[in-house]
Length: 521
Image 1 (cartoon, rainbow, N blue to C red):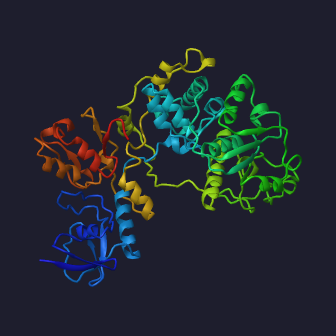
Image 2 (tube, rainbow, N blue to C red):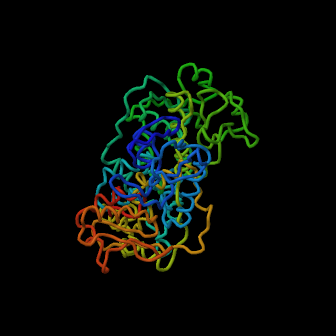
Image 3 (cartoon, helix red, strand yellow):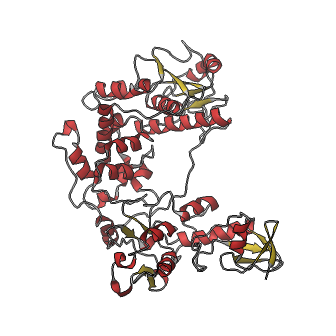
């Protein structure tokens, strides 16, 4: 029997099936977390709700049969609000972090857990590449950073935080010794002036050049480094390290002009006429600097800018670092420089300042006792590694041992977790609902390939249905009720016994980080 219905104003005729299948036939995407092609509907997540206009009802598209005369809307305000509520209910008891607390605490948002895993595996070239995604001058910062990341490290509640700063320094030193540089994007034909050769300006120049833009760096002093040249003693930051690492911007292809001060040797009008964009990173302005630069000032004496885009009132001019706001740490200046580069790059390409996307970030919060022990089970149990020669930093073996102490707080599926993606899309709030009970943080590690974290499981049933479809000898099933519900293997057998045939299919189908490969994505 042929069924006639409309979905988002598009007429269609189908031979039965569900509303979701009819929508797919029209190329209309409806979000799901508990549905997979080839598996019977489970109708547990309720994310696929749509509105049937003829009756005014909200119905689950994955299981509702397509019927004659239906007028379905898949993306109106009522539907979006219902989906957001469904997500918020799932998130109210989601026991896991999207990002590790260490990365969250780092002003530059360095992917610290990933760096640590690469160091533990001895993959130093990739560790350098990961660090340079957000911090181009790790050898310098590894010597001067006060390490807010280490204050957030959960390992510190057990014995001592992972020595992130020393490890970052080791990666920076390795990159310097190896002499490697990132491959720059193809030339865009656009040119950017960066004024100020401190951490913010040098960082902006690095990422603008890496994006393919021509870049000229103007510095008032005799060399790059800004206040790092005189505010940090040579025993802590050897001048040779500072010169060598900041000098990489020239090797990357940036032109550097020293003894050139904005408002004296060059003017903003002149730079704007010669270049396609300007980044001002001159450090904290002195009295009268804003007027000399031709820019507006705030009541606090900083250069006025938009806090989100770092744009000044003048088109194509961006303000970074202490010139526009407080930067008490060099790592904050580096973060500002990268933001300014992203803003200028977006403006050059689209006419709109670029802004880094902010995804959803589930936060586990403080844990202790058995929950902390669950994370410690995967980490090296030894205490913090002290370098045999402190002045020289970690050897590769010492760095590997120290990195292995990481608790792996971050999610193993940060890029493919559909719960996270939809939470961001629908603006879901994790704290909207407060569960009377909450699940414990657990890690099931009885399969050497996999990890199962029940606290992240949304009981979608996909892995259970996939093992049934694959004809697994034991397969998976649900045990317990309510908050105690978890996926188990019959007869108390390990995960490896339940996933002899279809482990990969189950990991791929899992819509969260509950079931993941040990090594992660």
